[in-house]
Length: 102
Image (cartoon, rainbow, N blue to C red; front, side, top):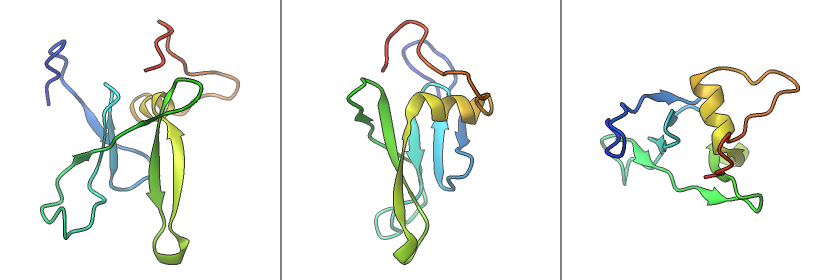
């Protein structure tokens, strides 16, 4: 995919530990984890973020199945970093250098 704003190629990777969830380095999130009734082709569908009271965007991901199914919430900028760069070292922070939390 190509981003129309700056012609940067969007690189989409699966989120480690969250099968069927994906994110791009541009901060877009997708899933194929939708009922086959609505997504019989297994296409990637965009996820909609929520805004945390701190101003940062975050997403809910469903993990587990059946009675063990639960939703976990993760801040978008941390998931993007961990997926495309690697683990965040202890004691370090991931934030937006320009101060824009979106």
